[in-house]
Image (cartoon, rainbow, N blue to C red; front, side, top):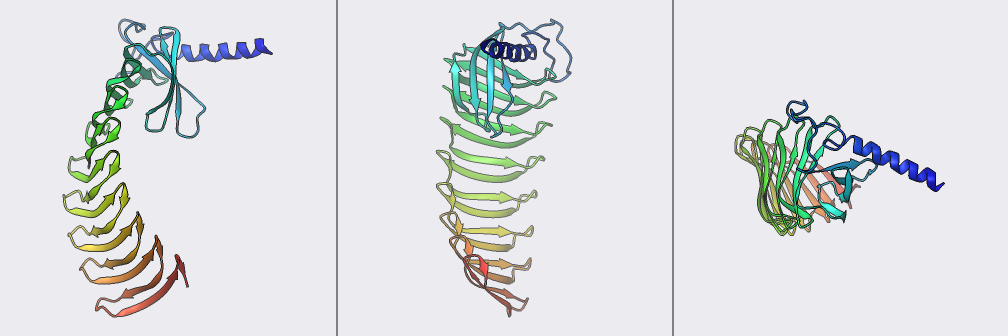
Length: 283
């Protein structure tokens, strides 16, 4: 039985090694998909990591090779953060390639930790995500781009946590949203914009949770909804308006559920419908 298990492990390791560019094959350019002029990539210039299939919870397991030798393994969460690392990664560059040989990830290590630039690439070679690390923690500005190179998200990190204003953009470069973070949690006013720059919504956060009045606007800048939040849940009176600013409905909430009388109004302010709710259920 031990011989059979050992043989199976050897086959798996051989399969992994055979698909790693620079170990037993040729690396292709991420842009052209063609092999470089020098043939095999020197394993002394960079290390290679290879994903192991099988994780279904969004996490990913990797083996890291230097030459033909496995030197480390990692468990990454869906945000590509290292949750577990075994073995020692020498100072230098670690790259990941897809099955076609195109470069998908490049990161640098120092002292067995991520250090400096970390990049993820689209198949065509354009940068998708650009992060910076300091002693293993995300530190500095993180940027996310479209395949055509348009910046769509940027945010400042300090020792692994968002600290400061995170901004999202439409592909044409106009601002889509602004959110403020302190130690990884949203704090203060968050604003969303229409593509023409007009405000779409405003809301307040306390320790990452909705708190206070959240207001939504139509494309002409008129208020269409006002909702009060307490501890991240609608609580109190919510008001809805038509595009002319006329009140159309009032709904009472308690701890996130419709609770109490909901009124619907016509264009003249007269009540046209009343509904009674209890803990989210229509009575």
